[in-house]
Length: 239
Image 1 (cartoon, rainbow, N blue to C red):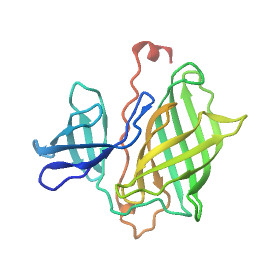
Image 2 (spheres, rainbow, N blue to C red):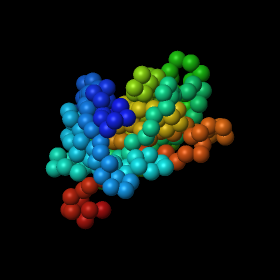
Image 3 (cartoon, helix red, strand yellow):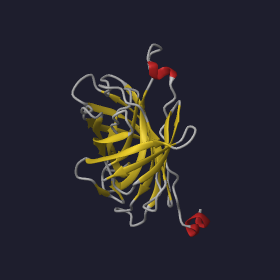
Image 4 (cartoon, rainbow, N blue to C red):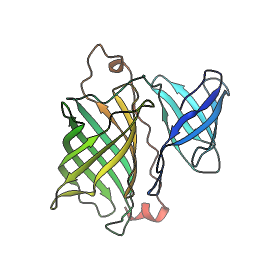
C-alpha cells in the first residue's frame, strides 16, 4: 500500500487475493485515502480493492492493526512500514507458520489446517529445503517432521515475491502436498503471505531466524495478525 504523505493511497498499491481457492491471476492495483478519526484511530477508504472498501486502522509499535468495517466481508490483519530493498537472504534459516482452510479437493471434506515449519535457503539458485509439521480438523491425524523442498523468487520493487515447496513424498505428505505462497517483504526479517494455490486458503508469516544484534528488526516486534477461523455452530459442537 503506497501513500503520498497527504492522506492518499496511490494506484501503485497492489493486492493479491485467494477467494475460496479462486486466485487472482496477477496483482490487482487499488487506490484510496486515509483520515485521522480520533486519538490513535484512522479510517481507510479503498477503491478497486477486492472484497473490501472501508477499514479502521490503529497504529502501534508492532504495526498498524486493521479491521474491515463494511458489509462486504469480515477481514482483520496488520500493515507494516516497508524497508526498501528488503529481500530473502541466501544461506539463511526461516521459521514459518500458516493457518486457514483446506478446501477438501482430494478428501471431499473441507478442514481447518495449521502448519509450522523451518526452511533454509541455499547459498545460490533460489532453492530451499526444510521440515514441516501439520495438524488439521476434522479427521486429523497430525503429520510430523515432513521434508520440504522448493524454490522462491526474490521480491520485486514492491517487495512482492513467490515461494513454493513440496511437502513429503508418495507415502507421507501434508494434506495439500505442499504450498505456493505470495509474500511481501517487510524489513528483511518479516514476510507476511497468503497461500496462492487452489487447494487451500491460508495466511501466515515467515520470519528470519537469529537476526544479528545490530539489526533494527531484533528490537522490533513484528507479528502478523491472523483472522479467526469462523465455523458454523454445528461444526463447533462436533469438536
